[in-house]
Image (cartoon, rainbow, N blue to C red; front, side, top):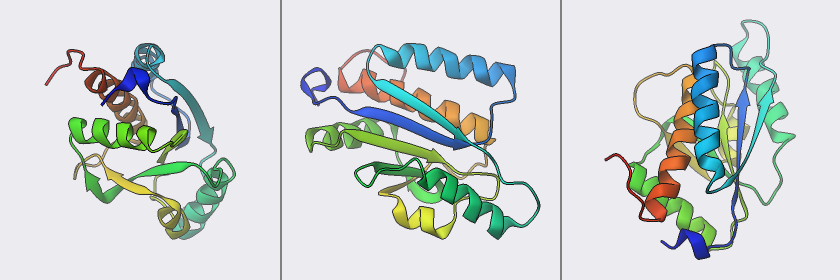
Length: 161
């Protein structure tokens, strides 16, 4: 992995809903600041659907997310049934995508009810953070932390094991 010599990859995080907890907003800002040293990051919040109809909510949110996806985007969807990857594996996969010429990787955190089938189909990678259920706000923070960690690993810089 040779992060410094790789083509520039831009990361994007699309998430349903707003950050409501100040302590999570603070953690996100900390990881944004750390990550800025290594990679470009864009974040997009889409409005969560209202009501208790899960199928309708997932369709609406997937459509809102899809409005922000370009055909060339490489999409990683956070999905409980997806691949559970170690931090090293995340770093290796991201480096391999950069080496292959990928210019933008978009990470998607779906809404409360999960991801609509159309969004699952669109994803290039289904990524599981493990079998635990997290608040969507926490999932966003974990994604940014893992992107930061991947950058450190790819540059052979010290990181917490």
